[in-house]
Length: 303
Ligand code: AMP
Ligand code: ZN
Ligand code: FE
Ligand code: FE
Image 1 (cartoon, protein in one colour):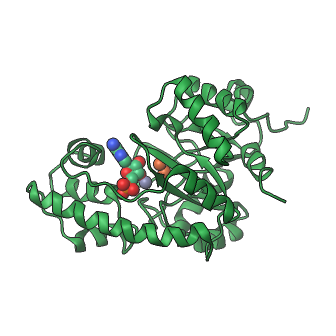
Image 2 (cartoon, helix red, strand yellow):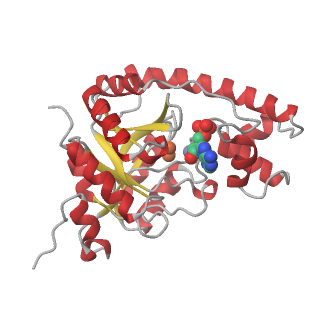
Image 3 (spheres, protein in one colour):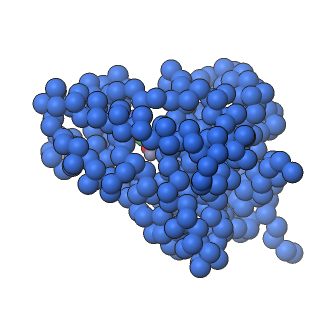
């Protein structure tokens, strides 16, 4: 009997063959490179994806798309698909991130807005360093730039410097003590509202997908209501299959996605050494995103 990709959703999560890797090609739709706060270059990421046996990967750096061209060139040589993406922070009392897929680098409504957000991020970083100095943890702009490899600096880079200087035990410890929301060095950065991010994505020919939906800290019924509203605003997908989510959480998110008529996507949120417990493709070891998730997403493209 030929093995075909299982349907995406609850069935695929519970199918032991699919989980064991016999259900067709596997992909990863959420990764970060040195262009933002990952530790692998875009080319290295593609090489890791090939080694992990993936048939496709999306590069979803925060606010920036400088990695797409080099990643795509390497993916072309290696024969795997590279989906152009980005991850955008949205306004929310907790944490809300929007992944956008099939966003081609260049000019466009969302692409232009990303350039503005990059400047706002640099400004936020400056104020974050001022705040750190005030609490007796001096980090220079030059140190931050070096850690980030020039541009795209973010809190994980600051965290790594704090670890190196002996001010924290790990990146996570640096967040918990200084950098997370509500901690002494936390500084807000500019964020788009979710409806604006969704609209700009659609106007740019891209597809908006809500990342790690549980980070919004909502209960099931609140989350379902939020998804309905976001779907009405044009959201097309939900990242139900996420590294840090349990089997039950993934299954329940997949059901919510289906109810709101959202495509189910998934990814590791691989950041290399900045999130050392996560691997590309497999997350914490049990991640399994079928290629059908990418096909389901592609089906939502207009025209
Ligand atoms: P930034 O865009 O510079 O604010 O940094 C965002 C990055 O920091 C993302 O990779 C997040 O996963 C990571 N991050 C945000 N909050 C935390 C937290 N409380 N603990 C660990 N990592 C976090
Ligand atoms: Zn990140
Ligand atoms: Fe995120
Ligand atoms: Fe991410």
